[in-house]
Length: 234
Image 1 (cartoon, rainbow, N blue to C red):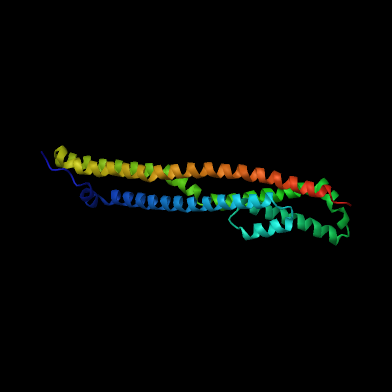
Image 2: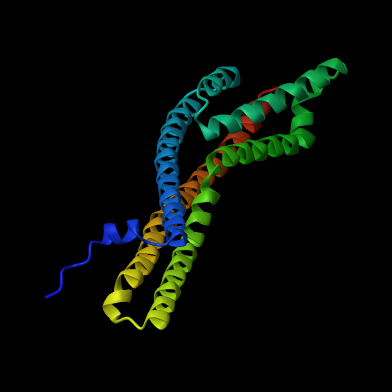
């Protein structure tokens, strides 16, 4: 029985193109795992911060106190939303005060300002998503491109092996190492792609849930503002 091939030795002796393909795939795999670990930590922090801020929001009626809490809790996406909304309300109040219409604050917010508040909250959602989504598209790119890079290495290695077979008239034993190194490129491509695709889908699902929570919080915030305006006299 012939001696088993040493796959690592084969790869070390493989052609420059296959080696470059394998190196690119290894770099892509390391990058994808780094992103996965970083995003896991980011999501855990954001979800914990959101839970803490939502509890504080539910048990306090002072917008100024809640704003201070939001300012101190930079990891919270709903806290970011609240800050955007509170700042917009402050700007409206300041503009009315400058125009000598401070006593019209309640009616203005009910009739017109509520739309500005909704836009401010939407801006908070966009800012939070921009921060959370950072590098997620890179995971999607690695997941979609890596198998094709591995396939390229495989095709190139097989072509090289059969070119040598045709010119040299060797046996299958002579080209087996070349075919083995070519197939390893496909395996490494899949090894790089699978975690990246899983990570992208997993974090996209968590992001969708976070967006749902932010949408619910936005409605709660608007309800709080409307309730506070009911007791405001013009």
